[in-house]
Amino acid sequence: MNYRETTEWLFAQLPVFQRTGGGPQYKIDLDKTLDLMGALDHPERSFESIHVAGTNGKGSTSHLLASVLQSQGYTVGLYTSPHLMDFRERIRINGRPLSEEEVVRFVANHQEAIQSLSFFEMTVGMAFDAFRRHAVDVAVVEVGMGGRLDSTNVLTPRVSVITNIGLDHTAYLGSTRKAIAAEKAGIIKPGVPVVLGERDDETAGVFLEIARKNKAPVWWAQEHIPEPLPCGLLGTYQKQNVQCVQTTLEVVREYWPVSVEAMRKGLANVCQLTGLRGRWEILSSSPFTIADTGHNAHGIEVVAQQLKDVWEEKGGELYLVLGAVNDKDPKETLALWPKDAHFVFVQAQIPRALPANDLALEAQSLGIQGRIGGSVAEGLDAVYRLAGPNDIVFVGGSTFVVADALTINEARNGTPSQWWSQK
Image (tube, rainbow, N blue to C red; front, top):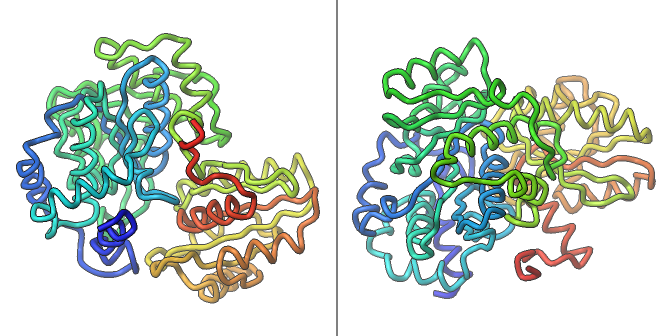
């Protein structure tokens, strides 16, 4: 198989709920992942790691950690999900994704061991195998969903990080923040310090109790770093992520010392160094167009507030190009956007996307009127016909909407989607 055929085969192994929004329940153990680690001769034991979980911010935090460590001169593996435009975004070495050849070779060489596994289990195996082959000094590994039963949880890291807890994936992780916190806290290991990005009364006791049972030292990032260093990511919500990063690197300074210069450089240049995309990313200056992957109430609440602040400062009209997935109730997030904006409802190019017509009906039940844009491309075309040079356009509501928008934007503007080829 070539690269296209290999990735198509990998995507075919996605759980039904990730592709269409329904399907089998969340897995009940890590047995298949452990079997895979055995078949690969335990790559998870061959490198040191930092393990990052949380409802929101875990991707940004992971990229920021990798960027700072790279700036210090370490060889850094980075595993994150999902990808926006290319499967290889998930697995990087010093910011560069695996080559197409490496992806093809892994699948071809381990077909027997991986053929009965899920997409995510295979990808974790591929990442850990790559980190061993590239002899990384440290791997920053983002949890996919939850923590306790996530395939990445076969690691024993030097530090665990949990950014925050919100209501997301409730069908699989629990219907309350306490229940979700318990799942996320499943990455806490005996004697391994844990950095917690957000302290609140509802979940603090869950973390403290699980940490106590594991004799794991607890670091509250917001209390340890009350004023974080500047960051190249523009979202106001990144302040909490930077607090997590600074605290985490202090916890592990005996393993990977980092200078103040490297810290500042890594925080300021994370997009250039690791290829992070879709976090309050400016796509155009006229009209001012922003895309952000926030997709649940916990994340969108902060994004919507920053958008309101920008709108108040810049003036003009505000256009919202929004989509959603079909396994989440969109009303909770729709209610957070400014009601006097112009809404355009779109559908991303995946089976799991909620049809634009259905999203418009959900909005109408909240008293929100808007246009039905169809695909993301059609929605953007409609907005750009309406918006003036001094107006604001926001694209989001779903990671998949942002992925489509980035692909469309780069194709139309001639910007190389393979940013790493320019390095």
